Image (cartoon, rainbow, N blue to C red; front, side, top):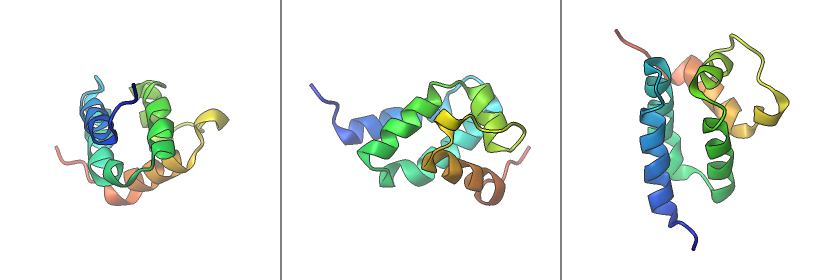
Length: 92
């Protein structure tokens, strides 16, 4: 049985908010709130694969501290990198 897309979106938003690393929770939570509702099934697949890479990796790739490996260098990662640089404001 295939998961309903609205349930999948809510699950991914929740997963994005609670990654285990506060910085990534804030970054991915904001990103998911802004974009998940617009993502296609394919983009949701890409995002879910990205989440499986682990929050420390996602964070350093998104903020540009490390080069994104080819398998994660997707349109979703490009959007996340843009979000982390221009749309995301972290306050103490």
